[in-house]
Length: 315
Image (tube, rainbow, N blue to C red; front, side):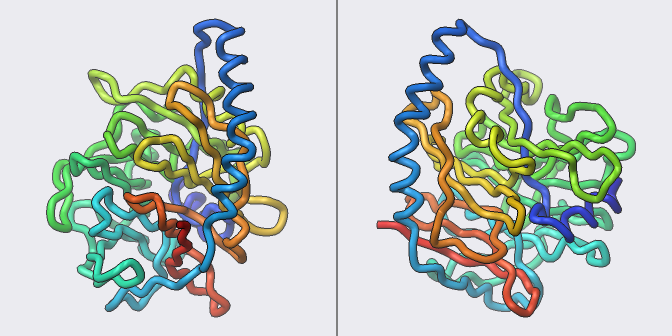
């Protein structure tokens, strides 16, 4: 499975691990349908306007880095950038950290301690309590789990273990491309169905909520994320604003991946219609939003084939 995942991420628009699937229970059909319709109507104009407000793509410099930079995550205080190197099958994919110099410049500090090994280790995120989450294929064959977490401090993670309650525990279903919410109570991740090929037959974004003994998949996940998962076969790499009223994610269309935005007016309602961010062109994936919501970072494939991090901004 590790070889399949590595190849899958190197070949596709899913070039690292982040994604999702959903589940839900309804408190009342009329109530849910009404909320969904309201969110959809409110989201159409709002998401389109917000998506169009991002402009001026600029390359981000990571001083000292001489390899691919993919799957960026900007910490909730905006001071540290996590990323991984290439996820090509022939590369040892590891996690790195860099400190902020300014909005377009970060200083490489090195590999993140306590998380890297011979398996694929990638896609970092962290909440305000310094709980660090990442993806690793290190134990999939025995645990059927790929999402891990531990405690982060000054470039190192301690006590890394699998995230309890998330894995579907079914061979062929693989979780990847996770992001923890700012408050640490909600985990957004991608779940892909592999049926024999290098690329999953489908992938969806899923939501899990923190419980007493780990996380529990949200029974309302499918409805909350309906507009994200309803169009396109492969949806993945989701990130949310600090208030969780905006969600940014990647969708692989027939030509190349695109990054979209959906909005909602309350965390109690589903997201509205998803809109492509028009300023993002080329092979782009894996968005992460700045704490103030004005800068969106992502990775992009350059003409020479290397991946670098870029940024767009809005007023």
